[in-house]
Amino acid sequence: MGWNKITIHTLTSAEDMISYELTQLGAAGVEVEDHVTLTEEEKKVMYVDLLPDEIAPDDGTAKIHCYFDENENLEKITMDIQAMLQRLSGFMDIGEGRISFGKTKEEDWVNNWKKFFKPIQLDEQIIIKPTWETLDHVSDDMIVVEIDPGTAFGTGSHETTKLCIEGMKPYIKENTKILDIGCGSGILSVIGLKLGANHAVLTDIDPNAMIASKENFEVNHISQDQYDLYQGNVLDDAQFAKSLGEKCYPVVVANILADVISPLIEIVDQFLTEDGVFVISGIIDTKEEEISQKLETYGFRIIETRRMKDWVSMTAKKR
Image 1 (cartoon, helix red, strand yellow):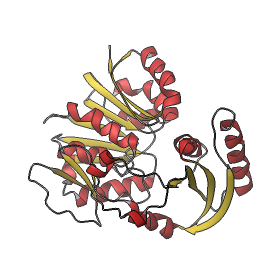
Image 2 (cartoon, one colour):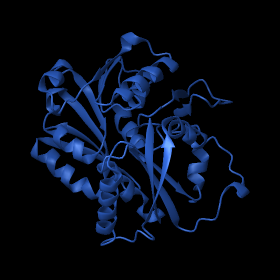
Image 3 (cartoon, one colour):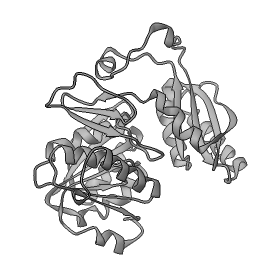
């Protein structure tokens, strides 16, 4: 299978917004290339040595590569991207805004990025490590999470995933059952189970997510009786949603996009226990007010809001 690779030449300040808009247009993957220097804080939590001659000077520019199936209408996709860039340029500086084109094979897209994915210390307890890397000097009280995302989203390095993990962590107890909606690589459930939850139910509409999640459970030595994987759409299929169980989840997590979270708010109460928490992430900051209002409308109380760069995550409970 091949992919049309479309590259947008822009500015680092516009990376998050353009990346978000590309996912809204249906991009199967988005990759950002820039020369932003790591902060001291970031260096402390990353298990990687960066030599000065490996880093080009940061000139404020960036390239955003996005991927669409080669069978899709490239002309229409290009027109949609151009219209999106024109709209964004009305309220923010997108720089050059030039579009260039290329082709790539699936195996290239899947594997080439791996050289940039290094172990990351998420907090004082959790280290996320790609399966092809090794770690030295890890203390016994650390939780090491092996991850191989394949083509499913979720390495733990993105702000939305970090925020979601931070939000769910205080609510994981020995008897916790997690519902992971839009599970991607399964990383949230893997971490939840390693933190002590007793069961996880994962669902996603993408068959690749089922494959990636199962593989990540296996590499983390999590037994099959600790989780269930279901491919389906909880928003469009009421019977499928009902089959996942009613009022039995103390923790429901969803690290998706705001436009998917919004309709999910309308139905998620059917899954939550009486005192259950709904942890959501993947919300671009321009959608924060919309999601907050939707939660209020459907009887939720926001008990915590977390932010990182342009992204927002919330924890909510029913009133």
